[in-house]
Image 1: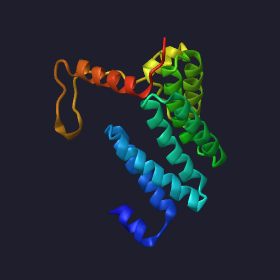
Image 2: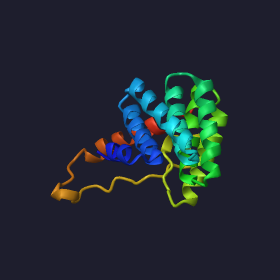
Image 3: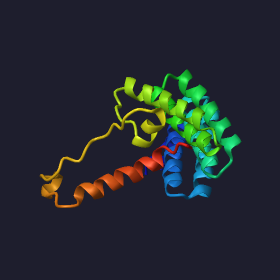
Image 4: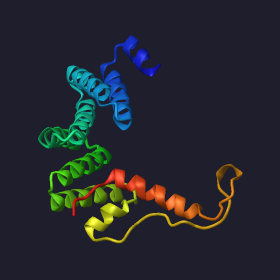
Length: 187
C-alpha cells in the first residue's frame, strides 16, 4: 500500500526507498530475479531524484545480490560505491552494514585478513553507535571473546510461556545459525 501511495504522490525518493526495502525482502527470500528488478528500479529513481542516500541503498542491495551470486568484482564495486555515498551522507549505521556485506564478499574471494579488518571496522562503528553485538564468528576472526547474551536458564518468557529443559540448547543453536548467516569469515 505504501508504494502505491508514493507512486500516486510521485515522490521518487520515497518510491526508491520502498523499492529497495522490497528488494531486500526478496533478497532474504532468495528471489534473486525479483530483487534485481526492484533494486535496479530503485537505483534509477534515486539517480533521477539525485538523492545520494537512496542511490547508496539500492547499490548496497545490488552489491549484496551480486556477491551472493558469486560475482565478486561486481559486488565489490557496487558496495564500495555505496560505502562512499553512505559516508558522504554520514549514515554510519549503513556504512557498518555495507562493510559487513563487503567482508562477506572478501571472505568468499579468499581474502580472510581483509574481511576480518572490515568486520573490525564495522564492529567499531556499531559500538560507537551503541550497538554492542559482535557475532561470535566475527569476534573470533578478530581474536576477541564472544559477546552475546548468555542463556539465563528457567524462567518466564514473554506471553506467559515457561522455559523448559533443553530450551537453552535450542536457543543457542538458533543464535549460532543466525550468526553464521550474518558473518562468514574465511580461515
